[in-house]
Length: 90
Image (cartoon, rainbow, N blue to C red; front, top):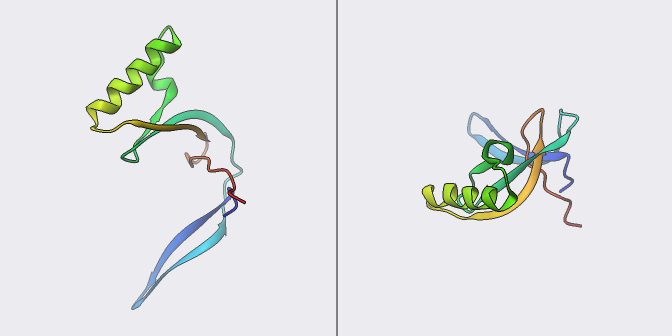
């Protein structure tokens, strides 16, 4: 799916379903670095900055261990709506 589209869940009486490809209403500015943990938690890099890059990585790893998880990947998210960036697959 295109990175500026999303999936919505709807429920109307007995009808339930998903609609994919819904255009986002936000004009995204992907300018906030985040780390995604294995359990789905999102850690904002600026909240865990240390004087050195090595110390920051160690601090993030310790925070992930406290949450019984691991750092899965790093990416960015929109500073306006907080949507995590997912590049188009095809």
